[in-house]
Image (cartoon, rainbow, N blue to C red; front, top):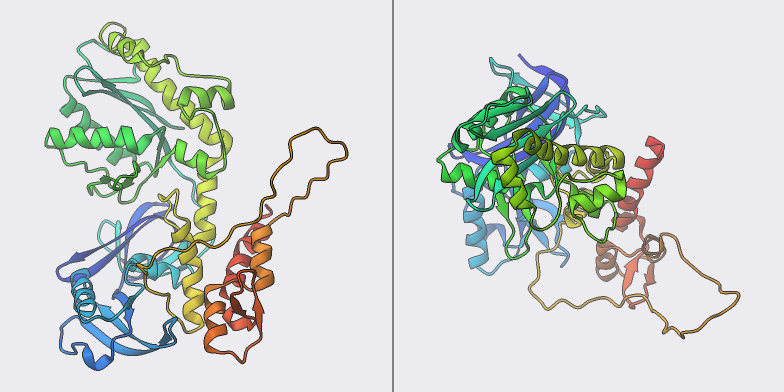
Length: 477
């Protein structure tokens, strides 16, 4: 029997299961977070290879003519695969024959959501399992349901001298606890004592499973706290089963960029430093002590480059002071998030652009989510990645200054200058192509002498820019 629910997408993933794509949407509902599996999903890309050159007898692959065209004004073929493995094999086959592929890097779950104009809030129907934690044969559409997040502020303390985990602190509206490796008898109910790291980590995994937070927050949360927990789990042979249904998390780093990412099925990890930068906040130092002093007029109980020695001493000699230090860091992060409304900021970005809740950056992904569906509606597919040398567009002219003291200085500042230029000159990838392939349309010459079509059907970016304005008008911002 089909059941209908409202919810908000917490995380998403796609993988191969028994030779077929399994797309999983972890959705927070009023009853808790559930796993939703949309029915009959395919991995999709386009190519300019002739249909006759593509294999027609591969089980699990469908190649068909489409009504779309590439930016070279050529018809393209739609290639649909039942698995990610077949998707990659078809890509390799077509590239080896020297043909181009388009939109091959769009993940199946992102394409599914963007083409249905789904951002965060959803309404879905599906067939639940006996536990009502997994819904299959699901259909998902947008909604306006707003969640009440269960947020945990997390901070760990480690031993620099032995590279081991000493404690994990958690604060939330309904939680205040420290998991500590110690031989001392705890004098407070806030402290849960363990004889070794393995016992602590296993207990913490059970604790997360029992109380099921939606969002972990912290300071350098992924790059330090979660990464260190993950390393200790690996060293001790523990599966990091922090997902909402006991799935393993994935902590990874980008190549040579110093960025870290956490994928936790059904949960999200948000770092305070990253969200401050996304929100346009600037500080001389982004250390927790400096930022909390600036925003809260409060700070860490210990600070300085050598504080690790005092932390290890407190851990051995004064357990209450050690735990107070650990939980104070959690409190500071929670108070910063609440005062600056950083989670609300991130959710607004999701509601506007459809990026994953866990993705704090990604202007390219945000643009693709908004632009591609409109581009497809116009009958075109996005161009392929080019390895040609990048040629930058000329920037705005900046006059050389003449130092000195002046009276009656006039300052001219154009609000929304770039959006105004885009609207005035119809600066748009599709409008530029339309001006080349359909010269009968009205054109306008933009500053770099690039022709862009004035035809309203070709101006996708203008409608894309209007979406945030409509959103803020509807929410009263």
